[in-house]
Length: 336
Image 1 (cartoon, rainbow, N blue to C red):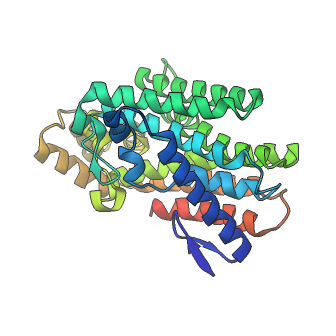
Image 2: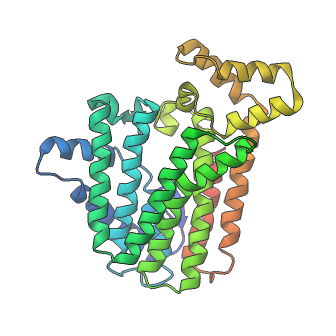
């Protein structure tokens, strides 16, 4: 048994391990090639997060899904580069919106070069992803366009908040399905589709990816509260500081509304106060880490991961299926 990053994924099949390692290595080279520009400064900014590393979660999913067809088909690596470039582009934009200082253990692009450069670099990466995508055919372009529309819609809905009468938790889970689930679903869809897998397999893996993507984002919500910057690669409590209501906060609010416990109401008031003050922010983070709402958010993460695993049941037993199942466990482990 050997281990393949990300998440320390255990692979018991040497052929699968070799395919995944070779594929991810080719994706890494493709990312560096796609982020080169004739303007050295653009290359530096565009490769900033590429060189910072990362889990390469989405390319890994492309490689594993491709095992259900021809894993050496020519469209697999380029499609993996497309989904990772798209993901990286959203990180540049997210850090501007969140005013984040750290990303993947290094200064965020907006901290180093300012918001304008960060936004335009994200746009540059979207453009490069589109250029690669054009060579993969009109169906791939349509799929990516639909996913990107869902991603942006999710971001807008998160900013706008739930409409009157809508349960905030349900609204948030829909937002996560758009913001994160859509691109993760495309990752396994591209891998299976480009490999020539049967349509039913493509559909099954797409549904798996949607649920896994939500679980992955919910695990990030938990990590934002529960981890330190060394573990997560970004500043803890960033969403708290910016007033972004992630799932632990929404669960806390629901508990405060339902039970009316004074300590819950007091904590909600603290979270809604000015958390740009470091001491107030640290106090809010400490108290939320100790609150049952964080454990409830962990349970939500587990539920989506279990749903993702269940979606794989119709697929034939093989090493790739086992690896996809293990990814569900890895996502849960990230949430503690």
